[in-house]
Amino acid sequence: MRVSVIGSGYVGLVTGMGFVKIGNKVVFVDVDERKIQMINNAKPPIYEEGLEELMKKFKDKYYATKNYREAILNSDATFICVGTPSREDGSIDLTYIKEASKEIGKALKEKEDYHVVIVKSTVLPETTEKVVKPNIEKYSGKKAFEDFGLAMNPEFLREGVALRDFLNPDRIVIGVKDEKTKEVLEKLYEPIDAPKLIVDIKTAEMIKYASNAFLATKISFANEIGNICKKLGIDSWKVFEGVGLDHRISPYFFRTGIGWGGSCFPKDVRALIRKAEELGEDPIILKAVMEVNERQPLKMIELLKKHVPELKGKTVGVLGLAFKPNTDDVRETRAYIIIKKLLEEGAHVIAYDPKAMENFKRFYPDVGEKIEYAGSAEEVLEKSGVILIVTEWDEFEKLDYSGKIVIDGRRIWAAEKTARIYEGVCW
Ligand code: UDX
Image (spheres, rainbow, N blue to C red):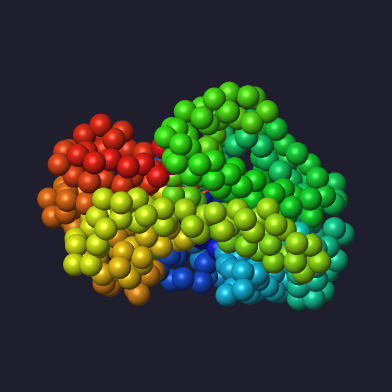
């Protein structure tokens, strides 16, 4: 099939290249000239495991353009993969969704055959039918489910292993209304061996939010229990090993520590809270899930102060800035909250991250420009006797922490074994 993908960020690029890998031709649409050029030169504008190899291998099966019309007219299905960022108040910003639907509508005006539009961006229930549908109809003069197809198909990709997740998902959720659209999506996903759940459009939208909110809840819950364990001298990782053996619970997503960041969990939980409130509900669990997550990184500073009560003028080493390992993404990283607090306390911070230093500096200039960046993890250890481990990059396992005071937010076994003083956040 010929697929067009609107928005070549993490989701768009991975989804598009995933479709290439399973035998389709893909055209990416983006407004960013730099991204277009990079994609056309088979260079991924983001770091994602396996992506560059795939782009090189299938160079003639995809290209990128600025031109919506050309992309849509030359494809059978269009995936909307644009960002849905948070506004100041936590509600969801639909600017890019509206723009994409308008451009799709304009292009569909000229199209004869049944074109299927699929929303992959994370959008709150009813958005596809109340925002995307009327926009496409308005600009195309056509009717959804009669003249063109419309579907919602959420993604469950984890950054760092996103391609693997695309090709080997736990499930594929397809939200549709008309038979023709359903057939197109089933055909597209046919090569992927996974349960396919066919639901209506707003159910598909809600599955995405409920999944992310549940995973975020699972971690915040584990961290709350972990804080109690810490006070009692219990290792919460062992506790959750025991808890996770119950097949009703599952052992995954129980790694206690300093909490969750990234482009999805915080944004989606916030948006769901706002939506619930709009509907007159008081989502107390979701609010507590957020609150635990905001407090959790500060546990590191509390523990640090047990050993170094006065931080003013002290050099503190920070290992890891990315919101998790194997990515250069710093969105909602716990490192920001921690470093901000260290600077407020008057400490000098020297940080290292294998991939995310530039992004950190650019994304958080208020703290990013006030800290020193090291050329390697070893340099951080050379220059500081106090180390905070914020992201669990593999290479931090190979360091010699002897003689150091280490506060570990992510459980690096090498540090646990060799540091002079070692404190884990929840163990
Ligand atoms: C997440 C979802 O997993 C994915 O399905 C969705 O599509 C997008 O959001 P991602 O943000 O890439 O993916 O990262 P993920 O690996 O889920 O980790 C999110 C955060 O939770 C990270 O900051 C990670 O450090 C933290 N985490 C994860 C924990 O603190 N403990 C855990 O047990 C697991």
